[in-house]
Image 1 (cartoon, rainbow, N blue to C red):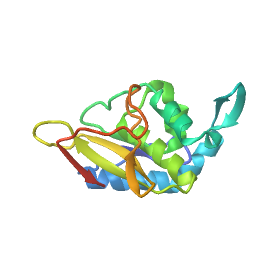
Image 2: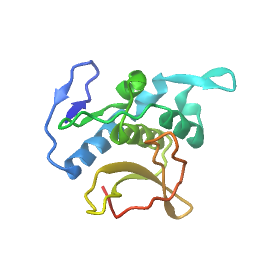
Image 3: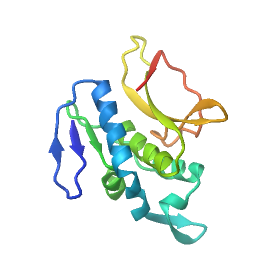
Image 4: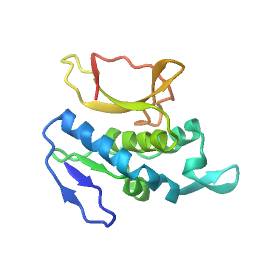
Length: 162
């Protein structure tokens, strides 16, 4: 797995052995670098505004508009929000989009967690996404694919909190 968490473009490589270790790095990148979001701007109502001024649905739409791009096996890639946004035209997978959503939630002091899941009959975990705790319930904020909706329920064969 490639983990990019320096201020420079130096890439630190570290093999991550399992979903637990991957989740730890995702939380680390969100918690350490969520302020990266304040450096990026986007259009809203014809004005250029920091992405941190978007409401949760607008930010979700921004993240899901990033083209989906699967990591090349066997390398898994995670990165700090700054680089995910900087190179968003290259695409991002569920981990990177999850990091962006997590960073937004952290920036706005909203409780979140990462979930892993599977839709495969075997139940083998292959996906990760964030959830937000609102109105006493955990709600999905999976922006992986452009057709996903905020708070959309999932049909899964296996899932677990990371």
